[in-house]
Length: 133
Image 1: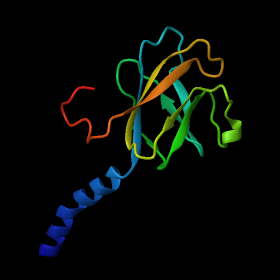
Image 2: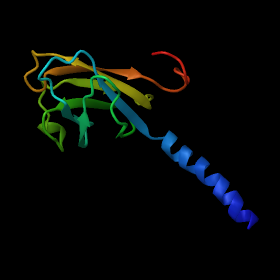
Image 3: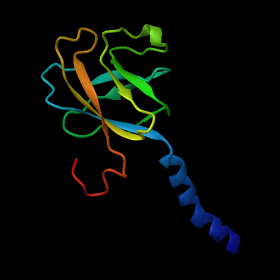
Image 4: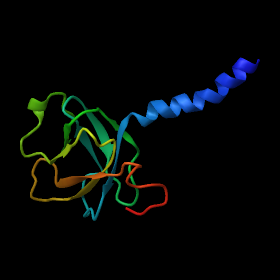
């Protein structure tokens, strides 16, 4: 009985330790003009996932692979780097970044996806609970 109680107390710690190692991002589309896309595909160099581009709140949390990667926002899914246009909006993510925000703004000159974005490091070491970004 006692060992079961100890095990039950350790489960939240193990779950937290597993999720801490994952790299994540959230997205915010600032100043989106009328008719802007509400969703795009985020390509990380190996796979793409459909992501929301919210204007008033942060998006859901999206998982990203480890290592140095280049992200691209695309109108349709891509499975290989060769499928990504050279003109697609892109940003590099350093290997050391684990928690990031993608700050998206409008770019009507981009014919692939009418946006541009930048990577913001929001690692909990730099921004503790309650701090302002």
